[in-house]
Image: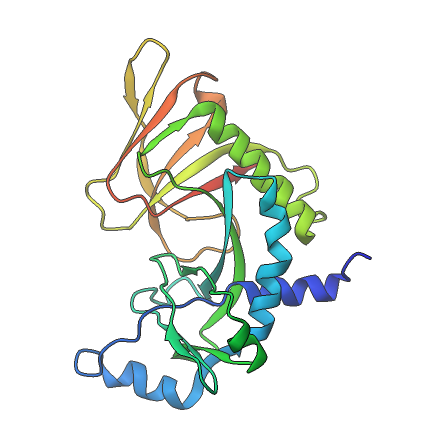
Length: 248
């Protein structure tokens, strides 16, 4: 039996619940943490757990992509720095790491599920929301083959369609990928190496990290398939945050 669209929407909403270490009160401005403690954005861990279980099958046969919970700002000017999520229940109390794009991996804890623990964000209600995020897996060696990038984009597009976005993606095709860096990363560099060994740098400019509503501006290198030969490698320097997709 296929889940109804309303159920899928709820699971997608739950999936992006982010997490991170709670800041020390001595170093964190009280105007951020104190109001949030009284009126914090939060969500049910049980719903987030069910969402993570829902997405797991879409990754099983797609090894080049990953899925995370994600904290997303409601407007692009909301800061992503310092986001913190605490998992709190009757006997469970821990923090979960959040990356610079608000992505987090939910720990699958039966005890927290049984207690219906909550995931509490250190921000007031109404400024951020929780959503799911597929992205291409980053490589530790910083070397991406052109063939793998094409395959990864196809895997991500098919996972999105299979998990409930089929109508929104009608007629869309993979046109390339984006390499995402922090807006202040001066070491960012992406080079294309062709079959002869010649290396050509890709332009890096301000842009969106992912498809969909903007989360603010990052430094982005776009690798569009139409502009490069099918064979080759992409060589990454600097601190890469993520690899996203370009659809047309």
